Image 1 (cartoon, rainbow, N blue to C red):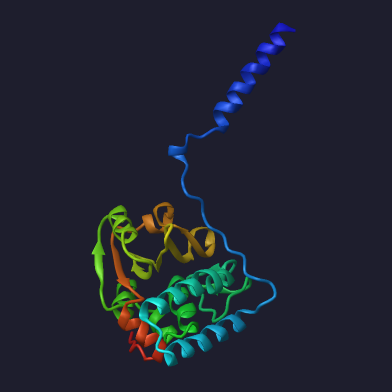
Image 2 (cartoon, rainbow, N blue to C red):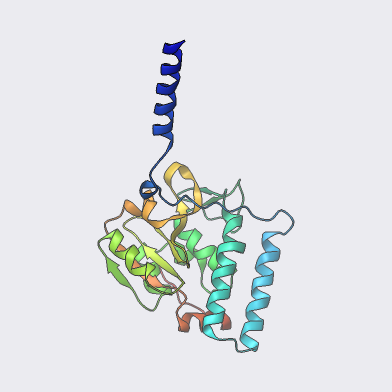
Length: 232
């Protein structure tokens, strides 16, 4: 009987030791979104563009427009793209589990749906750095991923476009985190929103070209439907 008690204590101690991770080692988890089942993607997009016209006619401040855009992108538009698969040649114009989307098209398509006026085909086919230069007024090159992440974390909430060596995506700065939102080629997963510091795809690059999408000037272009010239 005594050996059985000792054995149980030993097994219990091993299980406890293996199951408990010190808080200092716990990393932020990947964030999953689940789109509403009773509202179509087309309806969400139509509502956003109706609101965009209302924001313009009521001369709402750039800050308020930026907050609105970020909220709609993160919680209303992006969730519908979860489940769409990555493919190098994917160019679907709508999300779905039977659809394919490449990284460049995932940058050009949802943002165009929300009201940015550009040719989504020409934009998506550009080299990643050129995408940033085309739709952002500013661009900063980083050679260190963590330096880039720390810098953006200290800024106000915004949506950034990031061009990598062989990939492109968006960096979403929120109150709580810096997220890498992109069509993930790992396991052909497709659109994901993951903690930037944990992203394998982000870590594959040696260069990071970052531009601010929702600058004051771009907010006005979004409100007015101003065309962004694109060429390949």
